Every structure is written in C-alpha cells, then in structure tokens.
Image (cartoon, rainbow, N blue to C red; front, side, top):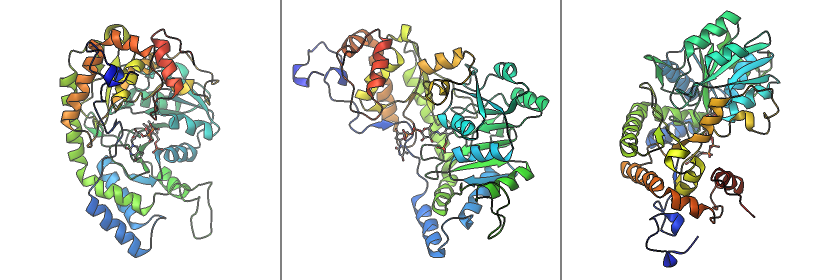
Length: 426
Ligand code: T4K
C-alpha cells in the first residue's frame, strides 16, 4: 500500500489508499455483552466462600430455573457449551442413521452429528430466513433418517410447524440448535419449547453469555432426566454410573455470569433493536447492499446484509477486505457452508443452491453493546464510500497484499481476488 505522503489527492478517502483507518480500535462482530459486574463478582465471591465451584452447584441450579422461566420450558439442563448440549441431546434420544441439518450453520452443528457416528444429510435453506427448507427436508427424509436438526439463525426461527409435521409423521425427534436464539420469540412464543428439545449457546459472543456455556430446554421429563445424568459422566450416585455420559457441566462462575446478565437482557435487546433500526436507516439506498430483514421477535443480535456484486460493484469478499483495512471486522457467517469444509466435503450432498448463493453474498456488521450509534453511522458511510469508489477499489485490490489481521489469511485474500477475476501471483 502507498504511504499517506505519496497519495494522489484524487484517491478515495479510504485506508486502502493510504489514509488512516477509520477505526483505530477494531470493531468486531461478537464483542461480549457484559452483565452487572458487581453482581457477577458478588456471586462468584459467594461461590468461592462456599468452596463449591462446579458439579450442579446452587448458582447453576438458579440459572437453570431462570432460563426455564425465560423460555417457558419445563426443564433446563445447563451445560458447558452448546456443542456438548447438542451432542448429549442426540445421544440421549438414541438417534441412529442419518440426521438432516442445514449446511448453512456454524460447523459445531455438523461436528456433533459426525462425532456421534451419524451421517449428516445437508438440506438447503429458505432464502427468507436462512433456516432449513422443509421441502428439501421432506425430499431427504427416509427410512434411514434418525432425526431432524434445525438451526434458528440470526434471530429467525425455523418453520417449526412444517418441520414438526414431518418429524411427527416419521416418528423421529426434531431438535433445534438454538445457539443464536436465546430470547427470540416466534409468533409470540419464546424459543425453548419447540421440537423435542432446543439447545442454546451462552458463548462469550452470544446475546447472553456465561463465558462458555449452553443449555438444553425440553418439556420431555424422561429426556431431561437422562440428560442431567449424562452431563455428569452418567453418575446416579457417588459411585454408580448408570448411563454413558461425559463431562458437560457448567461451572459456578459461568452461572454467576449468566445470573448477572439475565436481568439486563431486556435492555440489551432494546439496544440491539435500536442499533438494528439505525443501521437500516444509515444503510438505506446503497445499491446492491441489502440488510436482511429482522423478524419482529428477533433478539437483533446480528446485522446481516447481502452484497450483490453486480449492483454494489464489488464482491462481498472485496468489500470485507476494504472494511477490514478500516478496522471493521465484518464476518461471513456462514461461508463456505459445512458441506464445503474438509470433514464434510465427501458427504453425499444434494445441490444446495440457496446455501451456496447466500454463503457468497452475506456478511455481518459489528453489533452489540460495545458499538456506538456514531460508529454505526460511520460504518454505513464507509460501506457507501466503498460502493461509490468500487472501480478504484477493485483496481487497487489487484496490487494489494494480504493483511496481517486475524481474518485475512492468504486464502481469504486469494478468494476475494478470484471473485474480482484477479489471479494472485505469490
Ligand atoms: N450452533 C450454532 C448455530 C452456533 O452459532 C454456535 C456457536 C454453536 C452451535 C456452538 O456453540 P458453542 O459450543 O460455542 O456454545 C464464534 C463463536 O465462538 C461461536 O460460539 C459462535 N457459534 C459463532 C457464530 O461465532 P468464531 O470462531 O467466529 O469466534 P471468534 O473467536 O472469532 O469470535 C468472534 C468475535 O468476537 C471476534 O471477532 C472477537 C470477538 N470476541 C470473541 C471472544 C471469544 C471478543 O471480543 N471477546 C471474546 O471473549 O465463532
């Protein structure tokens, strides 16, 4: 990149052209929302005083009750993370054979299926929601299908009725990966009671976090009972192991973080909603840059947009490159789709045209309580500037080099350039 002193005055006001990046401190997708610090420290201090740090302690039990109340589910089983929650749920349900799931999800959803020795059958998604397309599920479901594993994405909820109908007809469980869907409502009903069971993530990057953590909610008494044993190695007494379990317990400090955050969750969602509206207003009318609508019951945790290369003037990845140079670490959840990742690319997969198209077009802009309204406006101005200077940026990228940023691997850069029709010579 040229240094600011050698900049041509006609060049765009962008870091790619040697200007100072807009954001000195990078903005991320997934900065944690922190709960009330004093409450967290008090609760954690009490756990230390009790010398009771994990193994179904009082804070974990209180957190489980709070999550059950929030979701309306009869049972909540707190776990160490959503990945283990999903693993235990499919295991406890005795799922065999094939599991139908979207490819358009975080790889954890598919990891769980393969770790259980089950066969993933990837189905396409509904372009309106990013969630499983029930018509494709219907075509995939057969004698070997052991379960349907839907994913509620970006604050949208799967077509729970259509999927429920297919699962009921086949007599197979319907499990929802609700990792991103805590406090999301669907037709007025909170996520947590759909299907056979739902699994939330409370990872640091989620709307409510327990550092690492997750929870399974279900109305099925037997399943809940099995799960609570399974997450504790299968123990049913001090030295009696009744079932095949593992260690998926949530610790007391993690539960303390959840308890310190839950009372403020309504405020966080209100702030998310305001940010969502501000983004939409500030981004309005940028050709080829279309924010994906947030459903009314969303937790508004993600701002997702689709980039149409033809109309915007740059590919999604070229835009990401330009944003990253400015300190805006937009992400592309979920590219390239699980079916194109190493562990799953040999799976027997139908064509997934919507998954492929969405994967190439979508990006997420920084959100969360650490992003200010002024920063939202500045990000929107930046996106607009990238559109206005698209030809100059595309030209500039031909000689740009990979950035030394966490998400700017050489492969990322090469893929971005390939979309611009430029082959990178190393
Ligand atoms: N199913 C679905 C649909 C999911 O989305 C997820 C998780 C799961 C299942 C599995 O849930 P868990 O087993 O994790 O409970 C992140 C999260 O690590 C992952 O939990 C999440 N989905 C996924 C959507 O996003 P990465 O690899 O993109 O995370 P990472 O480390 O790059 O963090 C994202 C951004 O957040 C960074 O730009 C920096 C910022 N950050 C992150 C952490 C951890 C912070 O500012 N502070 C932090 O402490 O996967």
